[in-house]
Length: 96
Image (tube, rainbow, N blue to C red; front, side):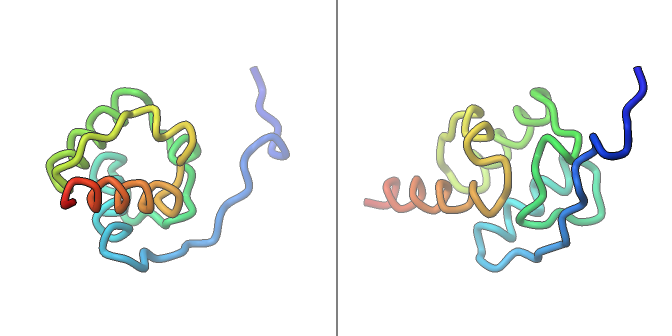
């Protein structure tokens, strides 16, 4: 099957993490995906993420933030920019 260039996702300009949660998530994703860096707007699926790596990432999220977050979160929040607020919210709920 041939893939035409116009079918490929457009590259997203790198956007650096801005918050502590974004920085930690970027580091978790970077290690799991074996990349030099991951921007906050990079889509997990476009980076080559799969369900096995998602399990690794969410195990790391559980350890790093002491929260339980369903892997299905990646469906609705496939970027760090979208996932970080969910992590922050769960972290705040845990502290309350």
